[in-house]
Image: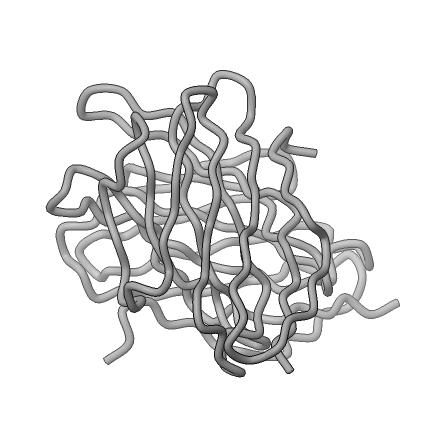
Length: 115
Length: 114
C-alpha cells in the first residue's frame, strides 16, 4: 500500500457527460501526476500539479483539466466524455523540491467506463 | 520508433529460474529509470529505480542500466508464481514547465510456471 488514495473505484458514465476523479497524495508528497491507462497499454501522462499549478502536460485535449488543493490532494475533470475515454485513471504522488524529483507512487486507480 | 520499447511477451519461465526483462528507450538525455509491477486489475507498483550505469540489486531483483546502449533490464532470481504479472519499464523526462513525466513501455507479461 502506497498511501495514495483515489475515489471512486469504479464509475460508469454516458458519452457527453462530465466526470470528476479525486486523489489524495501520500504523506510528505507535494506533487501529483495523472495518467490514463487503456487496456493492454502502459500508462499515458496527462498532467502534473505542483504548488497548485499545472507544471507539465501530455498530449491530452483541454477537456481534460485538473486542480491541486493546498493539502496536495488533486482532482481530474473530464468534460464531454467520449467512448475512448474508457480507461483506468491513475494518480501518482511524489516529492519535488528544487531540481530534484523523486519516485512516483501510484494509487489504486479509478476504472471509468463510458457508454 | 516508440519512446520506450518492451517485448510484450508472454515470457514464461519455470519456478526457481531467472526471468530477464528488457527495455530500450530513445531519449539519450534520460537519467532516471524505473520498473513497475502490475498485477491484473491492479495499479502499477514501484519495484526498482536506477539512475547510474551498472547493476542495482534489491533482494531477488537486479536492475541493469547501460546509457550508451539506451538499455535497461530487470532480472528476477528464483522466480515464484507470485511474480506472474506485467512488468512496466518507465523513463523519466523533465518537461519545459519544470515538471517531469514518466513514459512507459507497453509492459512485458511474465508467467512463472510450477
